[in-house]
Length: 106
Ligand SMILES: [Zn+2]
Image 1 (cartoon, helix red, strand yellow):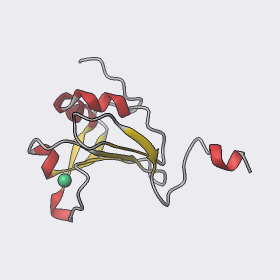
Image 2: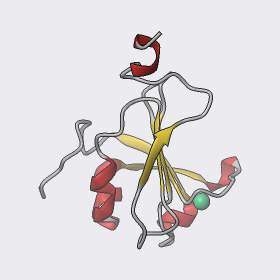
Image 3: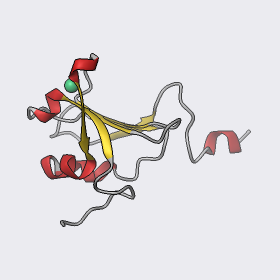
Image 4: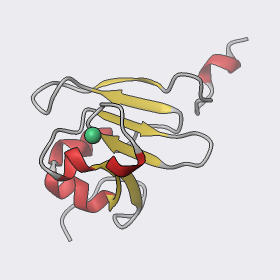
């Protein structure tokens, strides 16, 4: 197997969308706090019919730049305009975040 930087297993199943499977760029990555799930989508709004499940290893093979978001903490989100743009890191709005640096400051 190729070098695999995610702390999760390469066969970890993550939510993605048909647009990404059809060659669209992943522009939104979320690592959800509540259930520790990952989402790799094109960033558009989706219906259930657009949702598919792939392993994170497969996604990294399709787009090696996803390696750059492998240390996204739970509650974190990464966005970019396209595959040619750099990732911007932030938080998922309305979710808890770990490490909880904010609450430690109170
Ligand atoms: Zn999509």
